Image (tube, rainbow, N blue to C red; front, top):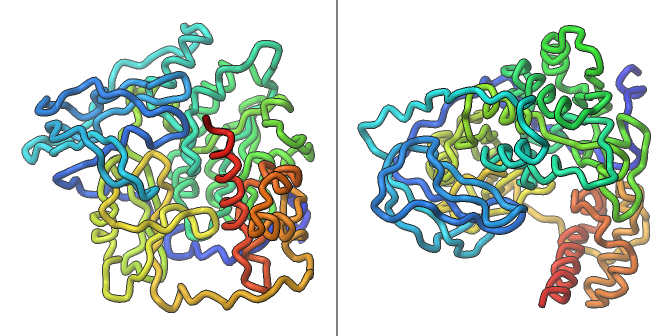
Length: 442
């Protein structure tokens, strides 16, 4: 009964969590490998620009590439070694992307020493944003949107609330869960830094009730701090989406086409807060991230701290996930993640998980005609009509799709999950959105 009365949002679905294999597994370090591939495009926005040359020796944490614009990021070396090449390499999106290839020094300790701390209170607003960009931080929930862009508040806007996202509603994934349990003080410290800079009146940590140890850890780390609280949430998907999280916590709906900024809020992932604390308190840029390796084909499920650029094949091999039964690997979660065509692609800043599935897990239901049951409408947290969007997309009536508010769709996959006819609704919506974006491009 207590869970039913917890804050939440309307609609959504309840997929099986599948978190039992890794939710209590401590974060372990992934062993270093020989070669790392770092795409210059592994975030939303413009690619970064290399500042190193082929043959140059680099140390762990050294700047490799500078931002290619405001909506861009810095890129730092995950290992001590040598620049082997700067050339196109396979990317998880299926394309060849310009990348920096590093050969790790087998004799280096690969230790990353703390740098001098930086007092955020001594910085102007512009300098704070610039430093967050230099740190290479992105949204760690999977979207990989440059964090500093959110902190550049437009003139006339005011941020009153910082929402720290610890919902982690995607099945299988437990990286945020373990981060909150193992590094709660750093989660709170990062939120303190950001909240003070933005001048918020309240900081809220939204955590689903299936993570009671994370709720307890954060409440202990808060230590009664004024203006900060933990809100246990009803377990539902897609609660981790920004608009859903704000609706669940505050009961406020973000209007169509608007952002959390328009209701005086900013949403950051818990791992992003840890990255903020690491940079300002220890001088550490983003060179690695925690990800979950799980799924029916994984022999040893784990939460791993993995250097950026590590080959997916090496991570899966480390977790005994390359057996003869492995048929598909998904980067991210099963609802919003994407299957990858090759295992010879790197771990990126936005890689929250690697899921390996067997043949029996991939049996897809036969697609039938829509029976007008309305389950997709009941599931959609954005109150759209997914069935109509899918039919219009199939008919290539993209202008009508746009008139039906397709860009309000967050592509959470709730509609496809709920559809008894096995219609790939979210895939058809993605096709329509891609076609509309291509049409707008010059």
